[in-house]
Image 1: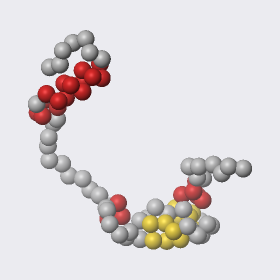
Image 2 (image 1 turned 120 degrees about the vertical axis):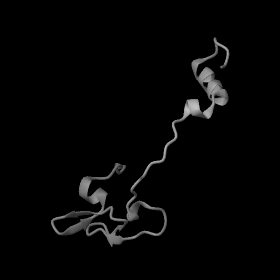
Image 3 (image 1 turned 90 degrees about the horizontal axis):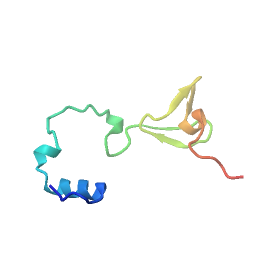
Image 4 (image 1 turned 45 degrees about the vertical axis):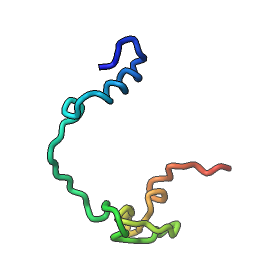
Length: 83
């Protein structure tokens, strides 16, 4: 492996370049269930927020007391408006 005395990150990066794949990775077959609405491609559903009229794709809406809401209207946005 790489010579000692190098920076830890450099040593690690150099080691990765020369290590055999079977020492770096464990490879196995797996099954992943991905719902239709999380797969790439065209949206499978589209609704409009009752409050702000924002379009909401792929079942990411929040339904509350009979209203269809986007996440920002139902839970608050991830941003803050500048005053």
